[in-house]
Structure formats: C-alpha cells, structure tokens
Image 1 (cartoon, rainbow, N blue to C red):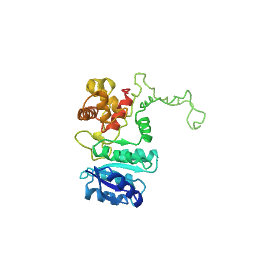
Image 2 (cartoon, rainbow, N blue to C red; image 1 turned 90 degrees about the vertical axis):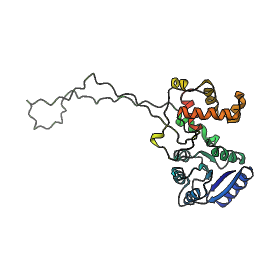
Image 3 (tube, rainbow, N blue to C red; image 1 turned 120 degrees about the vertical axis):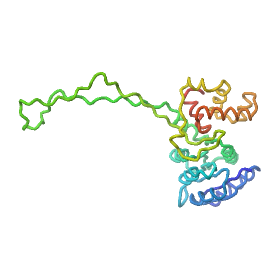
Image 4 (cartoon, helix red, strand yellow; image 1 turned 60 degrees about the vertical axis):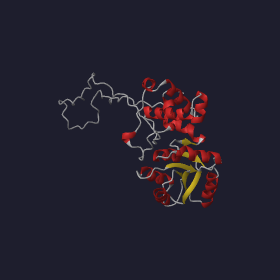
Length: 285
C-alpha cells in the first residue's frame, strides 16, 4: 500500500482527496495536516510515501514545508504540490523546493491517483497545463554573455577641466588597451531541475551545488547512451509512461524501467522531468 499524508487547510478538500485516493485500492491515507508546521511534524512522525501538499496555508505555506521535508535526511517522503493557483512562481518554487510533482486542483480523480503512484515510484509528474512552461523555461538555448567592450577613450581633455592646471602640463593620457588582450570568453548558464529519482533514491537537499547534473553535448550523449537507451529517452521526452514505451518498443516494462534508470544515471538527470528538458535542449526529440 502507498501511504499518503494529506496537507490542506480546508477539511472538505482533505475529505475529498481521502475518498478519491482510498478508492484506488493500493493507496491508504495515514494522516492529515492543516498547516505547513503540522505537515513537517507529521512527515517525520508518520513517514508517508507521498505527501499531497497545498500551497497557501496558515503558519507556514506549502513551499516552505516542502523545503523542510525534502531537506530532512531522516524523511524520505515524496511531495506532490496540489494547488488551486496556476502560477509560474508557485510552479518553479515548488520544483526548486524539491517537489516530485505539481498538480492543479481542477484535475480529475484519476490524475490525482496517478500523481501519487508516480511519486511513490520515485518518478516526477507535472500537470499537462504546466509541462510546456517548464520545458520552455529550462530547455531554451542559453543566451551567451557578450564580450566586455572597453569604454571609449576621449579624444581630447574636456573643457570642464579645472583652470588651476597649468597649460604647459599635458593631461595624462588614458592607458592604452593592448590589442592582444582577448575578449571575455563566452559564458553559458546551465539550468537544471532538482529531484533525484534514479535507482539509488532521491536526494534530500534542495539544489545542492555538488549534485547539479552535468549537461553533456549531443556528441557526448551519443557516446554515452546505447541505441536502445536513446530510443527510450526520445519516448520519455514525448511524455510516454513505461507501459506505453514497452508497447512501442515490444519489450517488457521492467526492461524499460532499467533503461530509464540507466539513462538518468548517465545523463546525471535527477528525474524524468530533467531528462525531458535535456532531450529538448539537445534536439533529441
């Protein structure tokens, strides 16, 4: 059974989520909380597999509660943010805090159940309404920083120079810029997502610098990935589930899961969302 903690400041909403999730047969609700503070305590006490987290709550909002829960090395719960507000700041702050999923409350019951199952399996899930925005933000080609342009050297001493300077004393010439100094090298930014769901488990921290996935070039990716792994990555980037990939490639679902795990490990991707972003950034779709 998948153990779930419900966090929402509206009792009616929690009751509705409980009824939907427990109707699935493989999910049980082990606790409820109405504030972010209660959620942090309950996550430690109950050790749920998945936490369905609202955003706007008294005492502590769901984003801060997510940061604290994911940052606690003693807690291994995955967090799915479920909110009424389709806002980019909530979406990207939730991912930065370490959430495994982002779902809107207008989603159907089957979407809520699927989100809990996906998060419990160590994967990530985004509502269809926000997936394109995530790809647009993280998969856009990084802009190059222009080379520094030296300030223009004035051709003559300005007229505003104080009169006390004797006319016979020449103004100090500006230092010449040597022609051999190269322009500043091109700098590229490397955005990344923040959850790890490879075979070894999730990372407990939020955006740990030492764990940021390395971004490989397309040539490096071709060297790293086998032909089958490349096929699996392209299908993952099309938002296919493991079962759909298995049917497309005529292989077992367990084999697909192994390939996905290998792809994530080789790319240094923290989860399927990061793999999708990688595939779009490098034209592999």
